[in-house]
Image 1 (cartoon, rainbow, N blue to C red):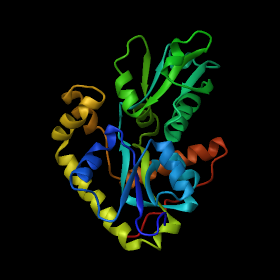
Image 2 (cartoon, one colour; image 1 turned 180 degrees about the horizontal axis):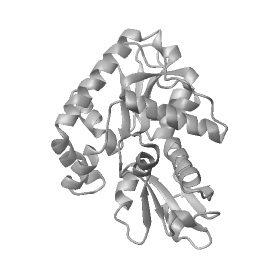
Image 3 (tube, one colour; image 1 turned 90 degrees about the vertical axis):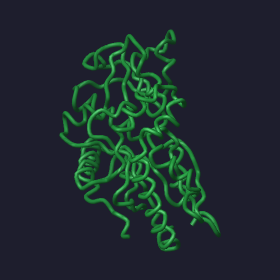
Image 4 (cartoon, rainbow, N blue to C red; image 1 turned 180 degrees about the vertical axis):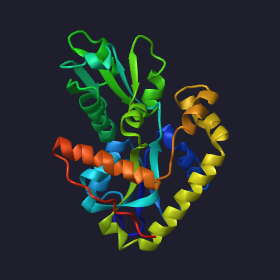
Length: 278
């Protein structure tokens, strides 16, 4: 456990988590648990270092280290079709990205690797990937012609004109005929035996928040839309496309993603998901 007295749970504070996180904060969370907020790659690092016990982490990170973690069986951040917050903005059609510079957000390993599958396996092009931000597309000499945006930033950039826009979850559904799972709730195996009862209570609380949040999407949209900013109705439409469960079909989708990564090399073979027994 990360602390002698209180376990820690990591939350991504993008608005796609608001249907869980708003009810969590309004009810004071689960007694005995401290919350750490951060972007996906930051929480990946904290979980890996043992600074948190449970984290909403990228699917890629979990698959890369599946032997170290369990996952809650019925919780995720996922989408069946357009997700609107994981998009590629490109000055040229995706078919024309061969050898061109594509700037990648450093915030999500899952989205970066999904983009590589979409471009290389689905569109048959292999760009040059660089790490950077959206401003690179307008910077002389950068050579960047496309940018991968995720989360709240992607929602802000969706209205930008003059770009081809690819919704990665939408393309994944068309090509793989499966939903896409962006993040899972991972538990350190070393923490599990020490805080088993606390984990059961946390899981119950997260599910209660998920159910409450999905019933209150209109109210939650009104609360969080200003963070982008976007209109409440647009926010509601966005949140309706965010799915928070981990159905059997989504477990299948997650394993399919891992298999494609394994076939590309430098990714372990993941034959099954280790679900937290509750």
